[in-house]
View (cartoon, one colour):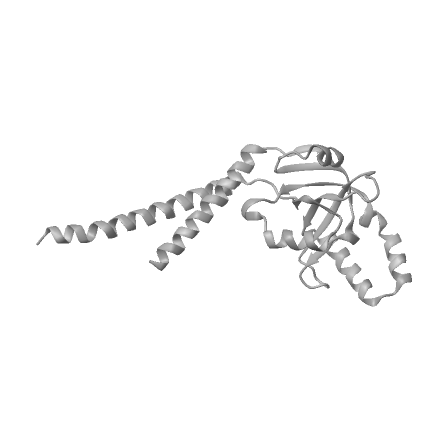
Amino acid sequence: MRWSFLLLILAAALLWGGGQGVYSYSKNPEPRIMTCAEYFEQRPDDVWIELSGCVMNLPEGMYSGPADHPSEIFVPIHPKDAPEGQKALIVLVSHEKKLLTLMAEMARLDRKGDEAEIEQWSVKNADLLFGECEIRGMVKFGLELDDDERSQIGALSSILLPEFVMLEQDAEPNLAFSLVMLSIGLLVLVGILVAFLRARSGPARQSGTY
């Protein structure tokens, strides 16, 4: 009984995840291309987007994992030429090595506390810390969205809009993988149903032989 329950959970997860992937692909077989300012104004429901005219504010970001070797960073994204004080709608979720290295270096300098060195390093890397950029990826939702993670980021940052979205950098829909998940989920579900029906019909057949 316990294994049946665990398999049922597995089947549900596979069906949901696969269905979500198929939905993402059917909705956006190609990325929606627009400027960061247009996304901020229109707030479309596309799940795969490519935005130009964005400004990454790395010093306002946060990271997960050890400070010296962060595994993931979360960076507020603003439209180019956004008014001062405008809250961010997008949080970029990135595993890019260059950005992880920059975040680790900032953490090291903060711990060291040498203001002159921090200023010198910031000037040297200004284009990377605050420069205009293009970003591409998928909006995290459903099983991909960690609610605890989203809540933590919202609580720690005062520069995000309440309805902010998290954008997984360079992610894109994978139709083949999603179809495989759906198929396996269906097979597991059918197997559970067959086992259940056999278990119920077994005693009935035995009682009829006496």
